[in-house]
Image (cartoon, rainbow, N blue to C red; front, side, top):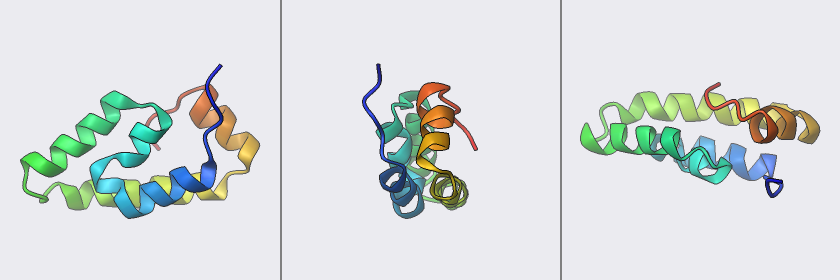
Length: 82
């Protein structure tokens, strides 16, 4: 079974480091994290703005869920985007 992931940690990582996909790596979504990281780095941050907006949206979504909802949706069912 997956180790429990903390909703608050994932939410804050998404809000503050979303452009780099750190929250995706934290949740175990390596492919999605690499996509966000490379999109930001390879475009010298131009697409990073879009990735940061995605991160903020996902962070808010993580933080507005209960711990049980977060575990079910993002850890057990592994919903990777939004």
